[in-house]
Structures are given as structure tokens and as C-alpha cells.
Length: 473
Image (cartoon, rainbow, N blue to C red):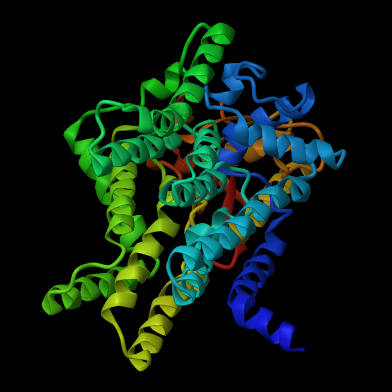
């Protein structure tokens, strides 16, 4: 009994956080694929399941991989093959990212406890587990959760001086997604500056070599890409790179907002600022200064990298655990009385939890998809029941994936529909238009309203969908 009490005293908060995440995510495991899952990653995973899991760039055509390294595809397809399934078994495919998310919580707890304190460990896992972006991504077939885990492990091995293990985890990080190269670069430059080593000496040669291993691994990936496809990168992705000041400013504003301000995270940022002011007022030296600087540089580097590249909200996920660690370290040093600590901890947890429960958007950065994906599936099934396979549809991005591709999980048959983008309505002979709450169009274009009649409206909580048919069809 004493051992059991000791176990729960040490790991009880971690277990509660894991149980909370699992309870939230179990109902989502069988939801259809959506957004980048359906458009980009699912076709590549289907192809890799067919060909067999492989880490060799070029083992699936670049049109499927989009030039990305293949570690995530290798793991998820291997998981599906291990249990004799395919990607049509959506729940099976989603269990893998859920397991990665649980391992991330465990890693965060263990690392924070080892390097800092039990309070930092407990508070970190609770605060991460209630974040809307973390909960949304926890079961999605996307690589950001794995990238986040590998960044955290690389951080641990780097600050622990275990450069052999760092070389392994950082190499896996760069072959999960290109962003990992940015993180690895920061670790390398940080080591050089911290140790004032710009010309390798005998004592440091081995460490410096291990720090460069991720770069060589990524270089091999590029060479294999070139051998298979005669190009190092997917050319369409290169077109997204921009140095336009207005665009960079817009992305920086968006990425900082999603990390520091939205979904109740403004409360956390506010407490962090107050903590810094208290420490400055006391004229104290910052505890764990090396960690704070390294975390800050990693976060800034991620923001700057995403500002010139293609950007979407989920790309900020790797910054969440390290920002949480940074915030709690400052909070722990500044707020000394337990009564104040407990009140502020409750507020910092309650604010994001409230927005996680109440704020339902129309993308994959919160739990809103749990209500609009069933609605979209209901619309697809309705179209199947009407046998509208000979009709031409116009709709927007997510519904295009749902209508067109039977393997995305919305269909009851193996037949897809003929679909074009709604903005191109006038350029095609369109029979049916579908509007829904995840798109930009809330009503038919003004010059098209008299040409279409509402056939059926679907509603699920705050989400809706409408099917219009051309008059006379």
C-alpha cells in the first residue's frame, strides 16, 4: 500500500492528464480524415502501406510525399501494417498519433522532473493536456506531434550532454519534417556560442561531429530525393517561400497569437510577464538561464522560419511544451507563496480549458471538427442516397476531399463524386452547390442565387451545411 501511495504521489498528476486526453480523444478516433490529412498525408500513407514501410526517400513518388522526409510515414504505415490493416481502418490509423501524444506527455513529465522540479513536471503536463491545439492534433494523422516529441527529446539529450543520443533523436527529427533542421541548427549554433568554439579542437571534435549528424542525414534525404525525382525539393513548396515584408509580418502576427494569446493562452503569457517583472524588481539573477535562452531562441527561430515558408496554425505545436516549461520556470522563481501559486495555477489551467471546451472553430486547431466532420459525412451519404454520381458539384476545400475521395471515410461506397472549387462556379457546368460552415462562402454568389434552389439544410450544434441544385435539374 505504501508503494502504491508513493507511486501515485509521484505519477498521479501525469496519469490524470493521460486519462483526460484519452477520454477526450476516444470518440474522435473514427472520425473521417480532413484538411491536410485527407489532401496530403493520407494518399502518401496509402501508397506506403501498399509498397511497404520505408525510410528511403523516393520509395513513394514525390507527388505523394511532397518531398518531405519519410520517418512519420514509415512509422504510421508500419503501425497499420503491423496490425494487418490499411488506412481505411481510420481508428487503427489514429491510435498511432494518440500513442505518440501520450509518450509526449510522459517525456515532458520525466524531462521536467529530471532537470527542474516535481512542480514544473506536474504543472507542465496538466497545462499541455488542456491546450486546444494539442488535444485537436492528438489523434490526427499528421507529423507535428512526432516532431514535437523528438524536439523535446533532443532538447533533453543536448542539455544533458548526451551527444550520441542527441544525434539519434535530432536526426529522426530532421527526417520527420524539414522544420527539424531549424531546431537542430539552433542546437548546434548555441553549443558553438556557449563554448566559444568556432575552430574545432581535438577535445571537442567528437561532440561537434555528433552535432552535425542531423545535417548529414538530411543531406542524404535530399540526395535520395534527387536520385528518384531529379529534384531536391517539391517545387510547389518552393513557390511558397516568400520574403515579402507584408506577408512575413502577417504570419509573425498569426503565429505569435496562436502561441501566446489565443484560446486562453493570453492568461499564461500575462503571468509570465508578471513573473519577469517581479524577478527584475527583486534584482535577482534568472534561474536556469541556459534553458531559458535556448528555449527562447528555438521559439523565435520557429516563428521566423514559418514566416517565410508556407504556414498553418498547427506548425506552432512544437513550441507549446518548451514555452510551457519556460513560463513555469519563471513562475516558479517569481511566485514563492503556495497560496498565490495555487490560485495562479488554477487560473492558468482553467483559462485554456474553458476555451478548449467552448471555442469550436472550422479547422484542425481545436475540437470543432468533432461536430462538423459528422455533418459533412451526413451530407456525403445523402448525396449517395440520391445517386448523384452523374452530377457536377461545386464546393470548398474540405468538402471537395470528402466528396471526391472515397478513401477519406465519408462514403458508404467506393465511388466518388465529380467536384470542382466553388469560386470557379461560373466556369463549369455545375449541377449542385454545397456550402458548409468550414468554407468561406456563407451563401451563393449574388448572380447565382436565382439559378439554384435549396434542397436540404443540415445542422449539428453550431455547424451547418446546405445543398443547392440548379433550377430545372
